[in-house]
Image 1 (cartoon, rainbow, N blue to C red):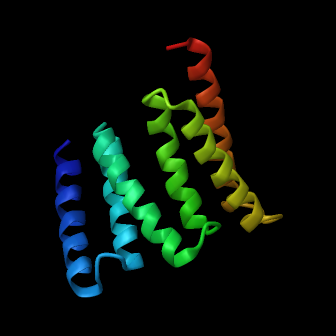
Image 2 (image 1 turned 135 degrees about the vertical axis):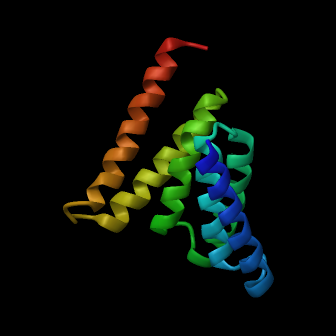
Length: 135
């Protein structure tokens, strides 16, 4: 747990520096926010994680459009939190959009890139498994 706190401290300092030097809507700020969101998610601070992911997604979309691999990565990170909150439609939408981006951008590529698709498909499986358990 101490490592997560130290990671948050470091990422927080990087975020502050980037906002000061580059502006609050710079793409590098989005990447810092995503990293902070991942740590919050690991710490089970889901509200803080979603706040970071949502802000990251907004900035990424303004710079990269709606079909960049980085958008898919953030959507995939958000899906299990929505699922945990009982927001199955939002979770499914994140996975649908993320999978469409990965398939569109990666096409017939082989190797490590296909792990992204496999991870999203695994998340679909978890979503369905959680749905079958009921509330």
